[in-house]
Length: 110
Image (tube, rainbow, N blue to C red):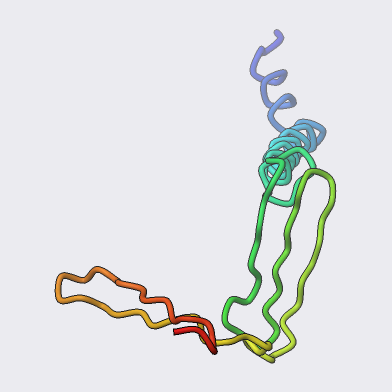
């Protein structure tokens, strides 16, 4: 007499089936990672123009600008907004919350 149950028991204990299941899991993980990389802002497959700010407000802040296939990186040097500018006018905040800008006349002209 042959029992059909022996074949089912041998099938459940086959170690190669667990390896096949692991391969399936890894294929799903790889597909998820590929989708994540493709949707990354700095990905060459993403949008044409992207700006990313790393460590905003920190002394080592970095600005990454992607324009088409060109990527530029700008690093903060800690100098803030230092430059050789001149005062251009005065801004007032009104009681209703609006802002009014009053330009100043250039030096020597009144």
